Length: 96
Length: 416
Image (tube, rainbow over all chains, first blue to last red; front, side):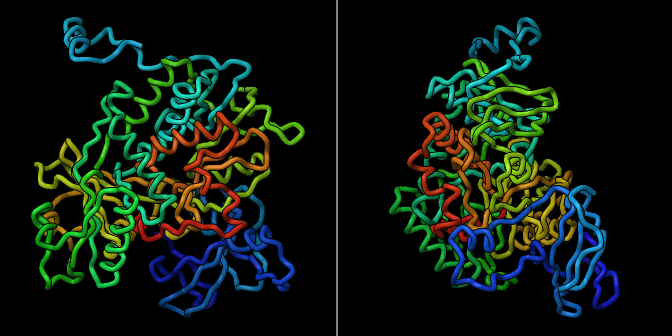
């Protein structure tokens, strides 16, 4: 069970209150009509899936009902930070 | 390789079972191989076996970072069935089921394949519509299956609760009598023994750390024990596929997730079939030694830690107690997690890549065990001939570009 700090509710809450939103910082293409099939596939299906630091979206379903981002280690599952959508993570890199 | 038989058992009993031949050698790696298989799980070992057996390619090494069959092969719930909806998937899994049916004889190794049948329960009208559609599709593909009533389910699994008053009443099920379970370790060991006898080297405790390329083609792998050359490299690394692909500068459409399972204390035989439910999300069978083998759902988040969150286990056990109230007093003995690589369409990737001589067999997600023989069979053919096996063609990596996805979320609905 993860304990997740919601940056909107400003509280640690249990994982069951949240749902996972997948990799963060994937922007919808602004010029979809010019994209090749491979570029669309990359946007829709291909993910970095790193072993180590991962930036990901979470949705606080039973709280503020808003998305936020988290930086989490996918090996230890430690959540290193949570931050608002539209802002950049403080912790980057691939290794924990 | 000395064959196992009733006679050999008797003979070895006379010498207190101290003179059995080693099941496989423990060779030092050669400098060069025709094919290196990265990952010594069931799928990798099956690939090695069929490469040697069918295609005559015996200068092969299986490079495994831990021990053979120690990853997801050792962590699954051993369910085997082939009742998939779409033609492409159904044919692949059915090939696998047919191979299972002769596997113990083929390998001269008892994989304890038990065709005890698989029930997939329906709890609402839409479930039943999906089940009827899937069973009809299966029958058109020559796969056994029938839609059964709650009364028939009760005959098959007497302990099940079919009361219309239950929280999620059982309205019916699909029933595949040829489905069942097998002994997970035996599959890996049987294939390893068979491949070893044909000359394949099992290189254990050796982690692949890089894939060396030259002019867009593979030339070998960097390992924790030095460089090993190879003309072809076939990666069968399940949960770590994304990490291995990155070594060759490739991206895959897979996400690695924890999938958990648990077993109870051993109890007397009480469930001689496999029961799965998408809606309440649980699946259960009883092993030959008596423990109830229960599979939990896949955790929602990406992870490599080989463990998941407790509430997923709790949710599964709730579902099992709902289906089998009698099991509410059974204690659970052990719980574990494995890392599965899930694809967007819940179907595997069996494919060549943009790097010459580099092949991937991954993305089996939550249900790869049942496919072990078929996966190895078509992948060996793909690697040997450098073109996709006819049954593997639809599972190429390019389908994510063309959009020709094979959506098996329904048939693969319960993570297992």
